[in-house]
Length: 368
Image (cartoon, rainbow, N blue to C red; front, side):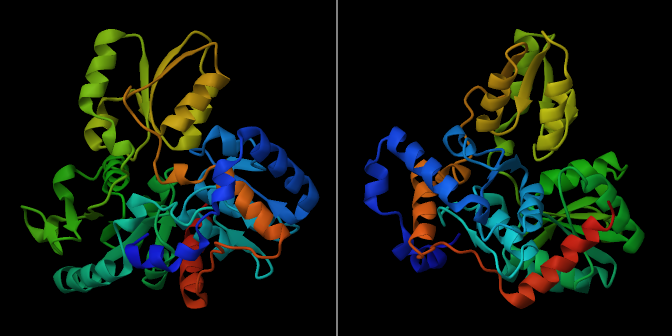
């Protein structure tokens, strides 16, 4: 979220009294309000959330899964989304008009999503059309703003998740000769590579310089990767892998496909958050794992599987800073605001944006 947006929500910053409450007070009051609101309240919690928040979640999952569960929960009048801004937007797009989606802290953004804004994207699209004509189909990772999803929907493309990126990219190539993949270059590169697209046929669009980065013949390009990344997953390095291999050759390494191509290629396995969770769940007792994903989740997996040896691939990794904006004081503040009839931090996507974003989402969902 940019400076202008932060200024707009300044008046909704949390009252200081919540920051002074003890953990016990916060938990007791949150339990009371949850019980009081009953089925009118639904709290989805993303896998990367803190344990202090996750304990009150009615469902845990990835961003799209939680948005879908929110939409399916017709009894819920209030959806207090414990995640980041783009996730709450998706929940609003999918949910009904009589449901309110609330983000406990409006500062909970996503650096990756912010790396592709609509103005940059429209400028890039115009230049790419000049270079390649009508041969490019846009795809966007669901980790993107509603405006980017709408842009993709309006231009015939679809959203993808880390779980279904492979079939979605495969589908995209049946529609057009080339794809533009936003906003995460690493997921796009790893997915296209797995489909057999050589690295030398992939270019990068730099939105800051407003130019295509490529050294070969333009007509050879099959994939145009937006120069964006996840600030968490990009911190896993080849050196981290080399250190694990040196310290314990028996340890298996599993990483998220938002990691760089170099890291994914050296790991034993890679996959979505759900894939990582399921893989560790199904692994044999006594097995050893170094996991390359967000630290809150790694610690949670470790606690849930004491029969296995689990570490973070990067021992110096910090939790996702923006995701961690959501904490127990902000959650309680949101719930008390509902009780008082003064709901704040409501996420509402404009109607036209919602319409076109829904097209992109539906094209993806139709492929399942």
